[in-house]
Structures are given as C-alpha cells and as structure tokens.
Amino acid sequence: MSNKQVLLKSRPHGWPTADNFEVSEGNVPEPAAGQIVIETAYMSVDPYMRGRMNDVKSYVPPFQIGAPLQGGIVGKVIASNDGPFKEGTYVVGMGDWANYTVTDGAGYNAVDPDLAPLSYYLGILGMPGMTAYVGLKGVAEMKEGENLFVSAASGAVGQVVGQIGKNMGCHVAGSAGTDDKVAYLKDELGFDAAFNYKTEDVYKAVAATNPKGIDVYFENVGGPVLEAVISNLRMNARVALCGMISMYNSTLDDMPAGPRNMAILVGRSVRMQGFIVSNYPELCREWVGIGAGWLKEGKMQYRESVAEGLENAPQAFIDMLGGKNFGKQVVKLSDV
Ligand SMILES: NC(=O)c1ccc[n+]([C@@H]2O[C@H](COP(=O)([O-])OP(=O)(O)OC[C@H]3O[C@@H](n4cnc5c(N)ncnc54)[C@H](OP(=O)(O)O)[C@@H]3O)[C@@H](O)[C@H]2O)c1
Image 1 (cartoon, protein in one colour):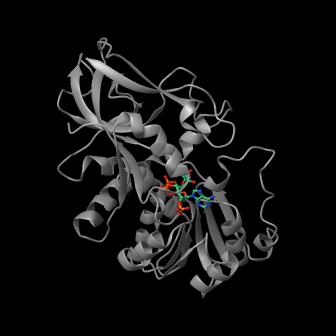
Image 2 (cartoon, helix red, strand yellow):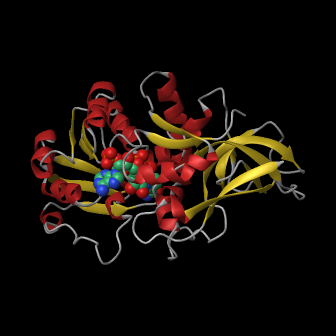
Image 3 (cartoon, helix red, strand yellow):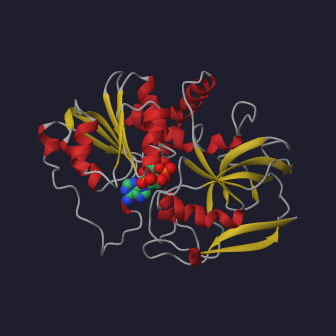
C-alpha cells in the first residue's frame, strides 16, 4: 500500500515557505505486534506546529529534518496486530502528516462518527475546543455575566471561546482580521461587538467594543491588541495567555518590544497566566461532553476551512499563519 508523507526539508528563518516541506512516497510498514494502522481522514493544521519547525527546546520536541511532520489526525483503524483498537474503530490522536500512520496507539482515543463529523474531533470537540474551555474555566475562572474579550476570535479556538461566553451570559467582544470574519462573529455567533484589527484603530476599537471594560481576556495574538486590552482591563481581571501568533514568525532581530503599559496590571490586581491545554486532562474530557451537548442542542456552531489532499497541507499551514483560514483549518485526505 502506497503512503505519501509530508517531510520537513529545512527549517524556516522567519516565515515558512513551500521549500521547507517535501512530499515523499513509500510503502506503509506492516504493523508490529501491538500496533495498529490508521488511515487518515483529516489532518489538523495548528499554529503551534510553527514552533516545532525550529530547533529549540519547548514543551513539545522539534520536528526532525527528513522526518514526517506530526499533528492531530482523525481516521479509521484499517489493520490491528493485537493493538489497542479493533479494525473499523475511528480514532483521534497525534499522527504523521501522511495517508497512513502506524502506531502502538498511545495517546489515541476512540471517537464516535455518529455524534459529530469526524473533522470536529480536531476542532470543536478536539484540542482547540478543549483549549477554549480550559482557558476560560481552568485559567481565567470566568463567571457568568462577566465581560469577555477574545482575539483571533473567528479561529479554531476563538469561535469556541466566544460561544462559551455567550452561553454563560457574558458580554462578548472579539477581534479578527477581515470584515467577513467580523460579520460572522456578530451576525452568526451572536458576539455583542467585534472589530477588524487590521483596518481600525485598535486602541479606540477595544475601548468601544468593551464599554464596561474587560474582566477576562483570552489572548491568542499578542502585539498591539494585547497592549490595547491591558488599558481596558477591569479590577481583578484575568488574562489567559493561550498564544501569541503575531510573534511566531519573528526572529530575535525583528521581535517588537512588549506592551508599554504593564504597570496597569499592578494597580488593577490583574492575574495573567499562560497555559498548555494538555496539562488539564480532566477539563479536556469534561469539555467533550459539554461541547457535544451544546452542538446537539443548537447552542453552538463551528466553522471550518477544509483543504483537500496531502500535497496541499504545507500551503494550508502557511496560509493559516497568515490568516487566510476562516475557522478551523483541516486537510481532508480520505472518506474512510
Ligand atoms: N496554549 C495552548 O495549549 C494552545 C492550544 C491551541 C492553540 N493555541 C494558540 O491559540 C491561538 C489560536 O490558535 P487557533 O488554532 O485557533 O488558530 P486560528 O485562530 O484558527 O488561526 C490562526 C489565526 O491567527 C490570526 N493571526 C495571524 N497572524 C496574526 C497577527 N499578526 N495578529 C493577530 N492575529 C493574527 C489569523 O486570524 P485573523 O484573520 O483574525 O488575523 C489566523 O486565522 C494561537 O496563538 C495558538 O498558538 C494555544
């Protein structure tokens, strides 16, 4: 059986380009005792993968040159050599950027394709949805009726953050990078306010869209939005530091200086805390039940950008870093 893989060819300096990736073709290895073979239905395209292209120590090890990239995958077990899942089981976990992954199944979970579309297990019912819940509940400890602001609000994580906020009776505002995304937030997801951070004065727009100030900031981007938010934080506000995508392609030479107004955090007794979703396994499990329930009840919706075919995965990744995705970016490989 032929297997295509996306390999890391070279490490980017600054923005990645198509030249940093290479598609190779080989055979699917036979599963050894205890292993399974997964045919990939969808691969996840995530911002943290940019960090893994650098040769630096982090909470996940760097990708190796000449080896397949790895990320979230969902697919079907098509062979099992006494492995942990039976043939025909649908599973989600970390796999190769490839048509097939051979694994001992560690870290994989079975999923129900009748409960939600398979791709949702990489999005709203997967790592991004869990991230939204963990950041709001486990880190920011958001309470009903508070004032919530989220950046990259139409993205994989952001759209879940905002909808959780609405379901908790919060005032929800957000920022995004196109007028279409802003309209989606207001007209379809029911955000109270939203703005385009590329075309509006960010300081004025944050103040205007958060008239009572901000109790909880769900931080996805860093840069000018973070600074404007700091000026609008209320007493005892919490900032859940989820990511800072505006800096992921910066090098030390062109890294901007940090927010100039950090002293505000002192007087307003603000708590700012970073987090990694995988450190909150119980909340992650809790979210899958809540999220699936809200989807069924029509209290939540989820937008995706679907690229087709393994060869198009590198471009989908580069485009996502530049904001061309609208919703959760996935790559569809098969109809298993
Ligand atoms: N801590 C964790 O465990 C964890 C887990 C998952 C994700 N994250 C982080 O959460 C954030 C969102 O991830 P996601 O998967 O939901 O991605 P996403 O929002 O679906 O896609 C990334 C988005 O970032 C925005 N963006 C790109 N460059 C930007 C810039 N310079 N300034 C402002 N926005 C910019 C773009 O949207 P616009 O069109 O709106 O610019 C782009 O669509 C990322 O920072 C990611 O690293 C953290």
